[in-house]
Length: 210
Ligand code: B12
Image (cartoon, protein in one colour):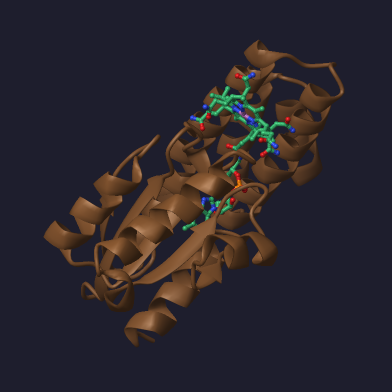
């Protein structure tokens, strides 16, 4: 079923993909299995875009399909047990980048796991992160980015937080498509989160929650 879903998304068969997701949920599939299949499909879409087989309209349709799939899966994720609010997180997609599907999943999972989340949206300038830290007083800041260009924006954001004298008060985690440990080091962040699950467990560790 997962493989069928990967192919339906990658081949732009929107109706079939959404039908499969509904069937999988009804059949008791784990929501994360569905999101993993969607991610695998996005990698294929990304490759086809790089190879000139797909163009911007396909990227846009893929993004739209993924948003719809996330919306179908969300209620299943909230079935996690309700817990006390554990801490605060500010999250956003850095300046110059408008990819938000991965960030929205992280933001949603943090919320479902008991964190108070301030989501600043996309194309967020460094100063906006600084102001949000001053006002909202989070323990953790999440920077998302899917473009190579966003690595510099992440670095500039970390530097702006430092220049504002706020760096010691927050842990910073970076994530998104091409981000890895090396990028984390380059940006000066504290950690890299491979996916939403990794982001949630690191955040829990940092705020001392189980
Ligand atoms: C969908 C998509 C789009 C959609 C985005 C829709 C939206 N609302 O987000 C649209 C059509 C708008 C788009 C636009 C563009 N895109 Co685009 N896009 C993609 C695509 C196919 C999928 C991205 C995605 O949503 N993945 C799914 C999610 C769920 O990803 P995920 O990685 O699994 O997410 C997890 C982790 O990353 C992690 N995570 C994410 N953020 C964070 C943050 C923290 C704190 C943590 C802990 C974890 C974390 O957790 C997530 C959930 O588990 C990728 C290809 C790819 N394989 O990624 C290209 C891709 C990212 N895009 C690309 C490009 C080039 C563009 C454009 C420049 C195209 C153009 N010519 O205009 C524009 C950029 C516009 C801009 N200024 O940002 C390139 C980037 C290349 C590069 N090296 O920079 C890619 C890689 C395609 C490619 N292979 O060429 N795109």
